[in-house]
Image 1 (cartoon, helix red, strand yellow):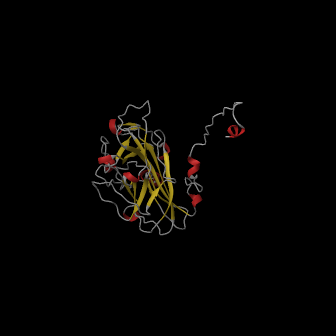
Image 2 (cartoon, helix red, strand yellow; image 1 turned 90 degrees about the vertical axis):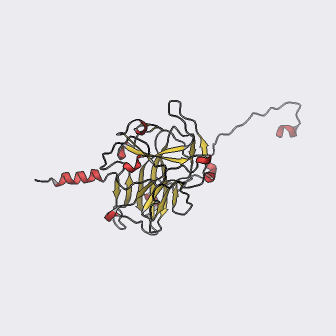
Image 3 (tube, one colour; image 1 turned 180 degrees about the vertical axis):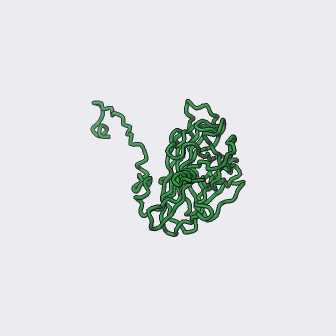
Amino acid sequence: MKINLPILGFLALIISSSHSIAQKKNGAEKEVIRMTFERMQSNDPINEIGGVDLLDNGVSSPSERKADLFSTEGEGDVGVPENIFGREDPIKDLGGSQYLGLILYKPGKLSNERSYVTIPLGRGKDEITLKKNLKYCVEFSLSLAESSKFAVNNIAALFSKEDFGSNNSAAIYNSSDRIVKAQGNKVYTGFYGWEKVCNIYTAKGDEKFITIGNFDLNEKTKFEAVKKPKDSEVEVISHAYYYIDNVNITLIDKEDDCKCYNNAPPKLEDSFSNLIYSKTPELTDKMTPAQKIA
């Protein structure tokens, strides 16, 4: 049987498109991972929430409440763009068929009910460890689901030497310098369309995994009550639930190489409204000069 080598190369490109792995210190290729959560080989049906384990590219969920997998191949609760928690179109130029969903906040006694996703920085002979003291551009896309009663900050990526195992019954709390949050650590309130979390991370030299979630206590997490869009029919739940996609880690030489990074983030006072309210003063002939000036 004669094998067409160009065709084999094309197929290999398709198979690796959802989890590309490369890292060269002195070469042009500096992409560590580009994860779009597209299935590679599994033919198991996507038919219920908590389906992150259906991915066969090393992606896992360390919490008892697993991350949810949504797909154009799924139906009902786990469909795309419509699903049990809301509606979001996939990022079509980056796979365009699947994304994950995470619980990042629940109030009160349910505060430990969170979900996370862990991604290896390579597997087997392609295993990657970040290089000590080198800088990496870290970014991922998110969108608030319409079922959310709350929106939160502290949405982060945590680098680690080892994964966190599975079925952790409590939330994972971590305040180390291995955490990467968005510049300004803002509250993400957008229901429609994707926003980026982006920042630069300086490696310790032993990182082999990245985990996305909320690693702060509720008391340290800023939350805002949000109102469901009028055209959404999903049930509002007392949680902050976000769709997650497009996780990228790239080795950079300088900050300018991280295209989503703002070298001059706005100052805190710049984030307030510039609307000025004024009232026209009432002057009468009976007022003294001092009263008119006041």
